[in-house]
Length: 78
Image (tube, rainbow, N blue to C red):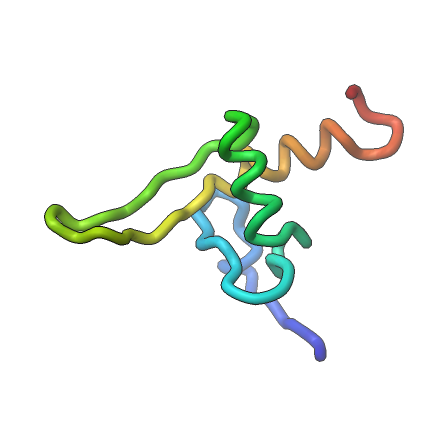
């Protein structure tokens, strides 16, 4: 399966939803991987929930995720 992205999709200045199944097409991280990073405070996230609702939509700030990945890239700082 080939996933194609438009120029707007590849913009890093945006919030992205967590993947439902499989890895995120932008980062390769799984949903549980995102939650581990969120719990440790390593990436920025927000829960968009309407008042009175039990559930919301979890989104992450893509630049914070890419910064985390870059810091752990081979040859990067640990």
